[in-house]
Image (cartoon, rainbow, N blue to C red; front, side, top):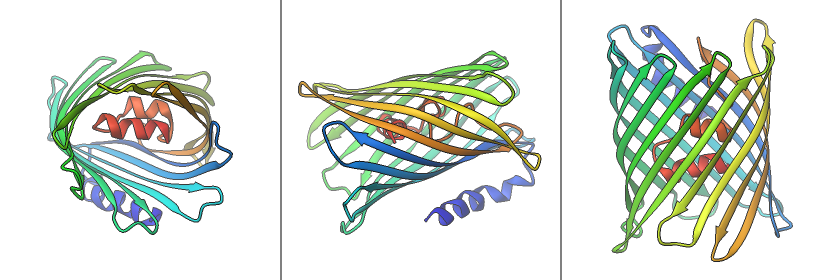
Length: 302
């Protein structure tokens, strides 16, 4: 599956690589160890995430995003996996204004289960870049496949990224998913803040916090993470080894459950610029959020 994911990322973007005027992105191989409070059973994850953004001389842009996660539960012979593929096509004007469309699919799979569950999203997005400030917004719609309960959601999001100094970037995002199912409706809101700071040429630090709330339900999810990166020079190719400590707190019906995580990552940049933080970090899920509050919350937590 990991090989297929890597081939998918390259296959979709390969036709434009030779023609692109500018390319940026990164690939992160990650490993995580998770502990759930009050449960004497550990979880472990292995992940592979990649992102490529291409800009052409005529102003056209192409972005490809792909991810794979394998979740294992100690002592349980069941595999849980998730795959993600996203594609966006747009146009960037000389004034800094850009607009485009996107399509994404997140699929969860459980071994021995008869079906796979997918979230399919489509929508339109607009952005504006001026100086050190990058703004973005999107509106879209997400459906569930197979359609087991007539579930769908209208989604919207706002994002901002600001290079406060050459070695400091801060960002924030807000997303809402208005979910309708079986005649009922509920809003899922996510608000996140992140920062990344280059301490020296070799050491960097990054962190983020997000809070997800469900309208009409006494439940919220808070995820926070803080990490340290070390820059390696592998035969002239810059790469980063990272360590992140993260916690996700789920509060519901007066009770609380914590998910504590230790993440390791190995990141290779693509093109002239990589990303502000490793792709398997809480910070990256805020700097470069997926389209939809549910998708973004799951990305930060795992």
